[in-house]
Image 1 (cartoon, rainbow, N blue to C red):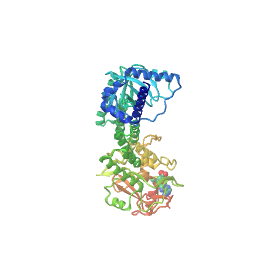
Image 2 (tube, rainbow, N blue to C red; image 1 turned 180 degrees about the vertical axis):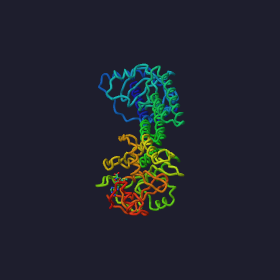
Image 3 (cartoon, rainbow, N blue to C red; image 1 turned 60 degrees about the vertical axis):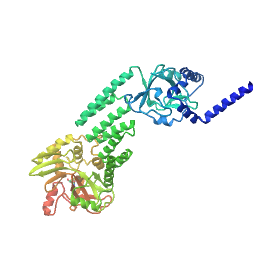
Image 4 (cartoon, protein in one colour; image 1 turned 45 degrees about the vertical axis):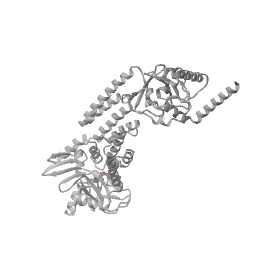
Length: 548
Ligand SMILES: C[S@@+](CC[C@H](N)C(=O)[O-])C[C@H]1O[C@@H](n2cnc3c(N)ncnc32)[C@H](O)[C@@H]1O
C-alpha cells in the first residue's frame, strides 16, 4: 500500500515535471482539444473567487508591493485607441487563446473583491455568464493598498475591455492579461447610453465642421471641430477632430498653428498618417524643408508622398546652395520655369557707421552667387492704368490711377496683412536714420506667416507710407517695386549686385567676388543716361550728398 502511494506520488511528480518542461506543448494540446467555452469552464467561478480571496489574505498579513514585471510584449503592443462604438462587441467565449482580439470589446462586471500580486487581479463575468480572472498590469502604483483597490474596483463594477487578450498558463488555465490601462474603461450602468449620446453629438459636430470646411469656411469649421473634441470619447475621435483643425489652418496658410494641432494629434498616435502629412506640408509652408523631409520620411511610402519629398529635396538644395551659375544663366535667359523659393543666403543686416543699416556678407561670396530670392510688392503701369499687386498675398490686384492710391492701398492692406505690416514697419523711416531696427531676415522671409510674437503694433500714417514708397521702391520702365531686402542696401555708383525679376520673385545675384564682412551696395539710379549734376540731384532724394 505504502509502495503504491509512493508510486502514485512519483508518477504525479513525473507528470508535473512533464507539464512544466513541456508547458508550451501542453497548452497547445489543451488549446487544440478544447473550445474556449470549455477552457473557461475548467476553473469554477468559486475557485477564482477563492484564489483571489487567498491573495487578499496574504496581502493583509504581509507587506506587499506589486513587482515590476517585464510587460507582456503582445499585450503591451496591443493598445486600442478606437472608441467603444467602433469596436465589435464579443463575449469571453469568442476569445482565441494567445491572440489579442483586435478592434473588439468585451463588456464584463466584477464578481469579487480585487487583489494584487504582480498585477491587480479581478474576477470578471460577461453577460453570458462566462467568468474568468483578469490581471491588470501597469494600472496602479506598486504600493497601493486594498482599501484603495476596493474603492476603485467595487463588486459589480462594469468594465469594457478593449482588444481583450486571453492567455493560457502552464497548466492549461486561461486568464485575461492587460498591460495597457487605456484598454480598460470603467462604465456605470448609464454610461453606455451616455456614450451613445456623446458619440452622436461628436459625429454631428464633426460633420458640420466638414461641411463648413468644404465650403471653405475654415474659421467656422475649426470652431465646430473644437466643439466636437469636447464630446470625443476616444483618442481616435480626438485625433480626427484635432487633425482636421490642422488641415483647416493649412488652408488659411497658418502653418505654425497647423503644426501645433498636428502635434497634438500625434501625441495621441504618433503614426497617424494624415497628421504626419499635415505637419510635413505645414513645415514646407514655413520653408523648413529639412524638418519637413524628416516628417515625410515617417509616412508610409506612397506616390504622393514621394513627389512631395522630391520637391522638398529640390527646394532644400536651393536653400542651401543657391543656384549654380548655369542655372542663373538659364533663369536670366528664360525668366520662367524655375520654381523659386524664398531664400536668404550669406548676408545679414548690420548697422553701418554713417548710413544707418546696410547689407553685409557673413561669408565670402562668389561672383554670380545668388544672395537672396524674395517676394515683392509691385506697382505696375498696365495699359495706361496703375496696377498694384501684392505678390506675396492672394494675388490681390487693384486697378488704380494715381500714386496716391498706392499709398492708401498699402495702408489699408497693411492693417489686414501681417506680412506687409511687418515689411513696412521694418522699412519704417518716418524719422529717417533715427530708429534703425535690425530685422531678422530669415524670420521675415523664411517664416513669413509666423504670426505669434508680432510685437510691432506700429501704426503707419499716410505720410510714413509715402516715405517708405519714396525711399524704398525700385522703378523699372513700367513698374515700381517694393522689395524688402533690396531696401536695406546702401547706394554706391557701381552696383555689387544684380536684381533679376523671375516669375513673382526677385533674385539678387552678386556681380563680383565679395569678402566676408564687406558691405554690399547697389545703385539707386540708372546713371548711364544722366549727367553728374542730375545724378547728384536724384541722390538728394535719399538724403545722399556724398558718394564714395
Ligand atoms: C533704401 S535706404 C538704405 C537702407 C538704410 N541705410 C536704412 O537703414 O534703412 C536708403 C537710405 O540709406 C542711406 N544711404 C544709402 N546709401 C547712402 C550713401 N551712399 N551715403 C549716405 N547715406 C546713404 C540714406 O539715408 C538713404 O535715404
